Length: 258
Image 1 (spheres, rainbow, N blue to C red):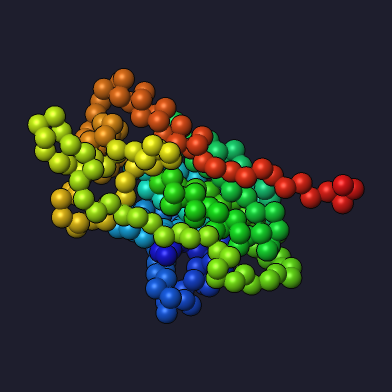
Image 2: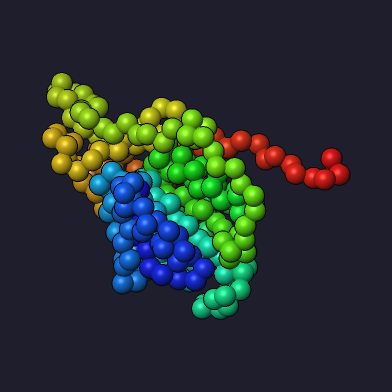
């Protein structure tokens, strides 16, 4: 777990808490600004970490380009938005739930990102795990959309047994995954899982898995730079189809009247 963050009310408590857990291998980085925070987190994701960045609404605006980069790179990244009142600096110590459209659409181009929102303080734990599961399984950035009311609230909560928690272990790429017409075995960074459409996740430095990375559009399969409009159309539709395939359970209706 790697947190790249810049302090902002009401999200700073996550940085404070995670910085206490170095004994569990958690790494925290307080960056000089919001853009550096998410940039460091995305770099950690490229390196094979479960990467998280925490912020509030004004910080999401600054992080939007790097979120789009994470969409293009197809790397797992949790963006935790603890909402407060806006616009702009707005009401730093007052809660609001007005960032939904920014979370859904606040990026240039077509950059779909799933959004997970907790309902109660205790639900924040389950929602964070679900956001991590989606990010790791589908190789995508995920928004965890909380707010100041939940962040500063509390309720009775049973600590779960370890066996009850989802298995978030990842199978990293370990060798070639494609055979060329010439019979050569190569690694294609954008060859997709047929069920999830997720691409393989290769840890840098793994022999034989060298590949290009960056924000310019990729060629399907090879990951090479491509300006071909038909390829761009295909990649845009494939990234959307990957998000559309995310397995989401039906909503559980909590209504006292039945």
